[in-house]
Image (cartoon, rainbow, N blue to C red):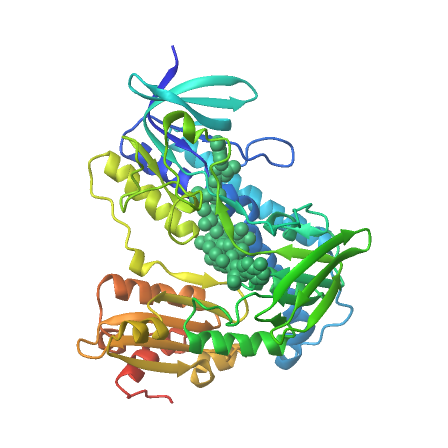
Length: 475
Ligand code: FAD
Ligand code: NAI
């Protein structure tokens, strides 16, 4: 007799493992199947986010920022550093250790919540008495049965046609996080989130970095004023970003990679580099899921089709995270995981897509929630804007980190906050105040009336809210 579960989660990334924990908290008998293998072939729970995404990229961003501070920033503080050198093996080993701590943390959480963990590939076999038969193909093969199935199989890096990832010369996010020696010249195709974060890491460590972007605008989804400010900072750092390009033939050989491309003026160019990172977006992953076996519907992008509640076309089959529509973000996947577990329990799980924050962990950091000024203009919505520069913030001056600003957009009549956009120091942390405010439908005045600690970067948030009513106190 096959093992029976109330809930089987396929995929142990941030969507899947959080869904499994919430379902277990609600009293269900839960299994989670995940196929990720660590370097020794063992399980490594946490998916893309933990193994080759959010966590290792932030570890390297931190290490490379320390290196840059030591090399260029400390002198301003009267700290002299001599004999600075880089131990890249140690840096990568530390990153791997941080990943392992997170893998182990999830394993512990599964034990604590009595979740049965399977290491291997999960695929649909058929609808069966009591739910669905799922095949687990790991060290051994077995069939398990689940009343509810939550698919959380994530996404994979999109390759450029004619330039398959070899993870030696042509790298996806995976190879980009384990380059063993600092490349003298590095190219990135795509100046989206990965392009900017990974480009920043390797530039700080000494690479000459060129980013080739197809679109004529920089960070089109970001508020224009914020994107412009960020671009100025990246230009100053020496991150060479070419917009409006057309990438042609890519040749990879012993000496590195040669990229033919056309610039915005239509001039043919060739860029020879040691390594190329391709970061042109990600594709939903349903490889090996055998969606056909049960008639699970996919859309034209290959994502699993779901409604607003993450229900698929099949009864009791749900899908969440990168494998469905919506932003490919770990916290979006987690929120959907919690909401689905609660819906299975008959509760009213809810995800507010209007208040999902975005953060790009470059220096300066970029963070936002809600609508951009260009979106409000396109909608014809009457709004007021208020900005406050970090240059006028005491804490930012003390930190020696005054690039950027906070910007509020509020409804012209009701003063309700419609969007908050930030570029500057530690805005990845500051943005949560704006998320809370928007979740509670606060007005800009509500934030302006709240006491913020002095001296703190959060005072820039208060001042930007005051700026909506043209009454900043420190600018
Ligand atoms: P995934 O994390 O992709 O997990 C899916 C899991 O399912 C994997 O372990 C996979 O092996 C497993 N799987 C797939 N198919 C099967 C199968 N048939 N059987 C068994 N197991 C299967 N997001 C942020 O919010 N913040 C960040 O800072 C951030 N940084 C990123 C940096 C990089 C370099 C990258 C690439 C991504 C980053 N992301 C970030 C995006 C984030 O990683 C994803 O949005 C998130 O991981 C999606 O979670 P998920 O659970 O849907 O899927
Ligand atoms: P992206 O969608 O952020 O950026 C891709 C960029 O590549 C776009 O600017 C696009 O115009 C460009 N592009 C596409 N095709 C091209 C071509 N042929 N030539 C040149 N440019 C081309 O995708 P990215 O950076 O790969 O990241 C994938 C996703 O992972 C992100 O969208 C995000 O959801 C997630 N992520 C989130 C992070 C965070 O939250 N801090 C960090 C890294 C990734």
